[in-house]
Length: 347
Image (cartoon, rainbow, N blue to C red; front, top):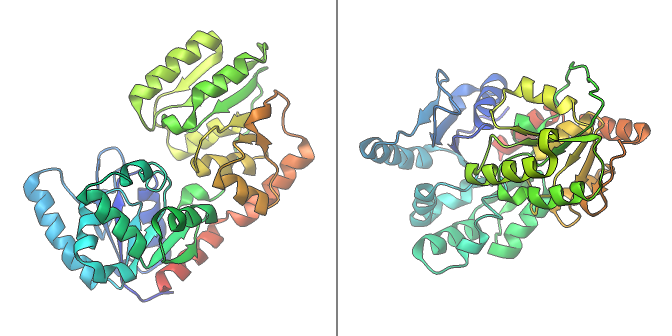
């Protein structure tokens, strides 16, 4: 195991508390510090050692930023869990000697969602482009995202393949599937507009069938957009539309996924990988857009998936489902994740 001191800079999100637990259970906790910005109530890391939560007050923020500068210099490597926090980007811009030992774990929206804004003039965009271009390391388990970072920003950092989070690991579930008499269709994974829910609703309505239900996770993301999705879903499908508006613990969400027959992810970018891995590992039928980096990953693994341009209500063929499940469980496993993290922490 690595003896390097690692500083993790994170935004409070659902992936982070389980990641902290994983690192502290499988690596030396004394070698890992976590600095977390954002909403600490929704995604709490309370009670965990080595975790510094940045408060919302101006005095707390100023003190945390001053401490962070010291921590960044003391660390052997800095891991950015997503590139979202403007203050951190500015620090790296003003202290470029830190970039060589900095690793950017690409989440998706920090690459795709920021591109248009980054093209606009302004100091904050210049600093962000400079930081991305000169980062020493790029981390993803979707090679296409690293390729886009190089194409769009001229990123020259060394690439590292890593599953990174427990949400990207297939978790064996003992949940017994319960048939409802309907074909249960999951549309999207969040209330992010990149899910393009309304396009899918139009395609499903065109099937002119009433033997399916539409289940839509909307607890995470843009809640104004979520209300629009709910209004349209109820209008088109009535009682056969089921929005999930409450955030579910991982075990309950896995139980929900086990009820799904067909999942339709109409994202225009890489997103929802945790959902995708779980569903394919359960042998479910999954639809994707052909022009996203996720599709290339699945193709490289010989995973069978279906194109959103040709949706029907047939369930996944049994042999194909079993083949997908076998491949997913082998590649997206916890031992693989721990081994990849060990390589990452060693540098």
